Structures are given as C-alpha cells and as structure tokens.
Length: 267
Image 1: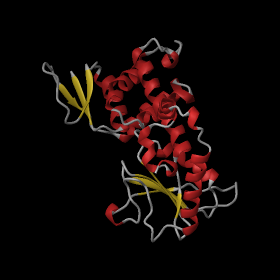
Image 2: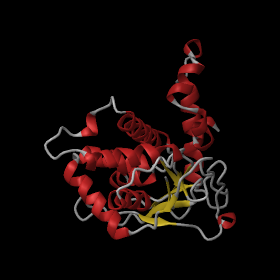
Image 3: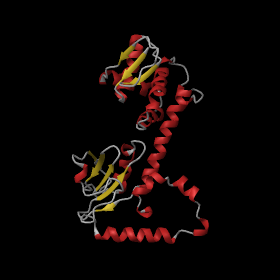
Image 4: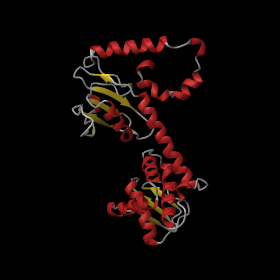
C-alpha cells in the first residue's frame, strides 16, 4: 500500500489522519506524480483536509514538547523530499505511543527521529548564516534591499530578527529562488506595538530595478551614499586580511561559496 499527497504539510498531516482512520500501514508516502513502486497492492490518494490536519497538529502539541513541535515545523521549511517519509513515520509513532510512555522525540536511536532532527538542524544552521551574510543596499528612496537564494526556505525564520534590528528603516528581503520576499515599511520606531513585515511577490521580476543573479541595485536607483559605503567596506575587508594567514579551506567552511554572489566584499 502506497499513499500519495500534494506535497504540503497539511497534506502530510492529513495522511497521518487517514492512516489511523483506515487502520493501514502504508509502505511509503509519495508526492503526487512520483513514480510508484514496481510492486504495489494499492494506492490511496490523500485529499488534503485542513480540519483533519489541524486535529493532528493539536495532537502533536499535546504529546510533544514545544521544542519538538518547532523542529517539525522548521524541518518542513527544508523543502527536502527525503523528509516526507521519516516525518510521516515519526508523527505516526508519536500517536502509536502509550500515554504514559517516554516521549519518542529524544530517542535518537530511532532513524526517523534522527533524520527529522538532523534536517531541522540544517535549516536552523542556514537561518543563522542568513543573518550573518545578508547584505543590504540603500535605494535613493531610503529603502534597503537584500536579495538572497538560500538552499532552504528560511525567510520566515529570520524576518523577526530584521524587524527588531531595523525597526525604524524600510527594507525588503527577497528570495530570488522562491520568488517571494518580505517588505517592512519602517514606520514602527517603538519597541512596543511592533508590526510584522508583509510577504510580497513580484508580478514581473524582469521589470524590477535590481539584478536577481547578484542582488545589485541598478545604478539609477542606488543611493550615492551606499555606493561610497560599499567601496569603503571592500577596502576595509581587504585591509584586515593578513595574507600570511589566508586559509581558503577555512574560509569556505565559514562562508560557503554559494553566498558570495550577494556579498559586497566578494564582488
């Protein structure tokens, strides 16, 4: 028996609900359109049901710690297909446990728990790197722009950080790989009453005044002050470099090459 779902988190949670309702134990959970196994007794197409998904999620919140539930949500932002089956089995095991049994969430001898946790940690690690490596450019209208292209969908995890840090400045962080971003108007200058950035999409990416390949603002909209600051930053970056201590392998470990194209000091 194989289950297929639409690739959403609600769809996966609905698959868990169907598993217990139908009293089945499918061999695998596949995304709609994936190739089926050569030998397959049957296929159940999971129809995503938000109400059922919410019931499963509330059940997880009752049975797992807040940190474990957060890791599940964070892991899903990895967008890795190889997460589907371990996460599905992990959630099923949570509901199969007796109420008085120790929680499975820290049983890292279980391969599914370990896989879900490791993937979530990868997302959290990239979230930290995004906070370190994002470089803003200032437009003439005062808006700060940063273009990113992370391996995982980490923007929802970092916007609060930038909303707190740049509360009185308008900014836009745009994910060129996933074609969406978050815009903050910079009008909330007080610690109390913070309003969140707004998720946006662009109708025509070819018409925007910045290059999605390297994140650079077009010269006609780039602030003259920012161009000076970029030049000063490159000069500073070169000045603090001690040639005798250059370690390319260590630099690549701390600052992976995939981030370089959006970093001012590496352009």
